Length: 173
Image (cartoon, rainbow, N blue to C red; front, side):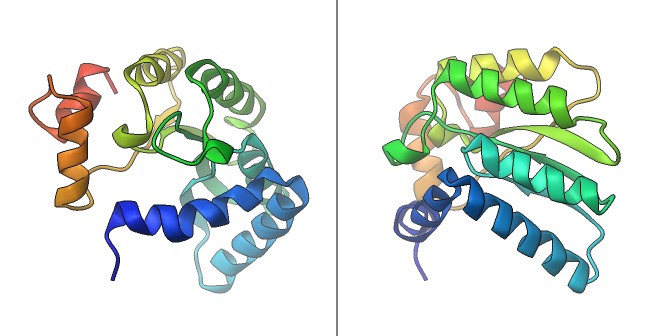
């Protein structure tokens, strides 16, 4: 019953912060993949947390089971708790390292993953676009337009853009 931004701050971000611990990331990756299989899901596209080990752990488990998986480390350098933010440069570097390690390994694909415009500065979106366009076959995923408050916040953060999707188009994403 909560709005997206309040829900993220109250529930999602604290849960994601636990993925800063590699043991937690490994345990949850194993559980998550097994739950997908248990429910008949054999291929998935997943947003990992900003912690690179969350993506690394998920890819490792999916690869072990030869699962078709596309995923990526979330990129977010603002409007999130400090323990969940990266910088434009660290986001680029960590995402690129994961991409080079896992993309096209077995049945795995890497998705460059800016979480959503509210959690990325223009600088981060520029670097996201640069990374995305460095590779011919890498994927891109992001979140767009959950509710009116989110749309209003995007307009405040990107006043030169008429719509939410215009922000991504501006950065060639």
